[in-house]
Image (cartoon, rainbow, N blue to C red; front, side):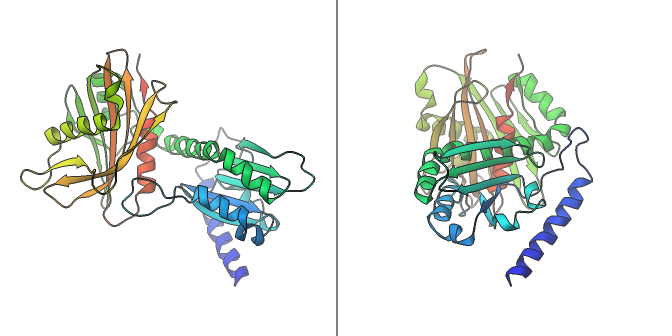
Length: 334
C-alpha cells in the first residue's frame, strides 16, 4: 500500500514537473519548482520522527488554524517524506523543511536557502543534537520561519501576476491614490471616488475584491482595531450595497473578533494588519477579509487596503493569500 501511494505521488509530481518545464523562465538555470500554494514538504529520517515530538511540534506551528476564515484551514498544508525517498524529483518542491538530528551536532541552528535545487524555492534546515533540542529550536524560531515561507509564497504569486499588471485598474490606482499595486488581469474597477475605490474580480465560483479607503490623518488612535473597523464600516455602508434593499457590507464583530497585529515591512514601514470576517447586513452573505492600514505621509492621510473573498462553502485560504500578495505589492509612486 505504501509503495502504491509513493508511486501515485511520484506520478502526479512527474506530470506537474513536465507541465511546468514548458513555461520555465529562460533566465533561470534551475528547474521550475513544483508543489501547491501554501504547501511544505517536510523531510525527516523516519516515520518515527514524524510520529513523535518532532512531527507533533512541526504540525503545531505549521498546521495551526488560519485566523479569520469561516471554515477551518491550516496556514500551511504539510506533506512528509523520509530522507531515503528524498529523490531529485522531490528536491524540486517549492517549500522544503529538512530535519537534521545528530548527536555529533554541538549546537542547534537554523539555515535558510533560496533556489537551491529549483526556482523559486525556499528551504529551511533545522540542525539539532536530539529531539528536545530540536523542539526548543523550533519554538524559538517558528515565527521567523513561517514569515520566510509566507514571503516566498507572496513572491511566487506576484511573479505570476506581474506580467499582466500593467492595466487600466493599476493606472487608476496610481492616478487617484499615487500608489503602485500589482493587480493582475481579471480585476475591474467597480467604483472610483476621491477617498474610496472598489476593485473586483468575479469568477464563476468566487469573488475577490479590494477596497482602498483614505481619510485625513489626525492621531495614532486611528490605528486602533476599533477605529479601523468603525472607519471601514462607515465607508462600506456608504459605498457597498447588498443585493437586498437597505442591505450593505460590514465587518463582522459577533462571531469572529477582528484580530490586528503590527507589520513592520509594509509600504510605509509600519502598518496594522487586520483579519476577520465580513457579512452583509440584511442578507446572507459573508466570508474572510484581510486589511492593511498605514500612514501616507505625502498627503497626511491614513489609508486602508481592505480585501475580501466570497466563495460559499469552499476553501478560501489560497484566494485570500493571493489578495495578501497584491496588497503587499503596494508602493508609493513618488
